[in-house]
Image (cartoon, rainbow, N blue to C red; front, side, top):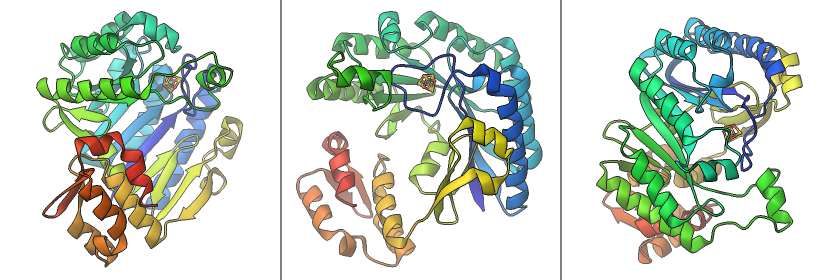
Length: 376
Ligand code: SF4
């Protein structure tokens, strides 16, 4: 059986104002965290035995390259030593500008790491500052050059739009500049103001004004047209890639294939059960890799839940879902289960049916949340 592995590194240089990920700047915890993570890696691999092969690995965060190279090396070594990894596995590591050193590059070249996702968000330094990013565009360029010159990894850049005070022209400019780089992959996310973040607090007291819906959509539509023109294929609502360069690990999530999450708060989907790890770093370190202590909130995914997930995860991809695959997987006809919403969305050109395939139209992507909730 094939599985994906996600490894969470929760450390960052500082906290971005919009970020609600499980991440923080606590360098004093890094060594103890790495040791507990390695024990979790050993224990999980022993539990799985020989019946699973890892098809994709994703070391994410946080900022994995905030770890000193020696600690990152230990984690990669433990993964290689304890898991059965397919020779053609996709292996991604996230990095942020200014945190990638020559020693990190040496480690990247020591292991079969094939992709690096380099956070950017905008090419405008004033915007980067206004959202609490701790780097400039010039830092991104230096990290990009270091990686591109010294490794054969494919590169992704994360971009954000609908940022407070971001103009349409500033967003156009970011795409224009970025597409002069031979990046294999781009991820574009609209800013969502989340509770518990600095932006969330400012918004609550009226000190932050979000971007309006019209401008948000204007930027998204521009990205779709512009990136197509530049040779990128959109394969998911927020993701674009050059031919053959779509992220296999991401696709695994949308196709509901099994994956194991290792590290603080990491989520897993395995044997029809979703669960996640302990979210407090002190408790995570104390558990020292003991799976029974670490894993919490087990939820068995019933057939009804699995059908819902099939719809709202599968429809995220531009290729959409296969109507036959639904019948084969669940033993029922898709239109018997979701007759009303499907007929409504097809009639209003929100969903497009083409033989066996059902996908969101361009307009459907704009109202995807409404579509997804109609299957719940
Ligand atoms: S670098 Fe990423 S994970 Fe870290 S605080 Fe910023 S957005 Fe969050």
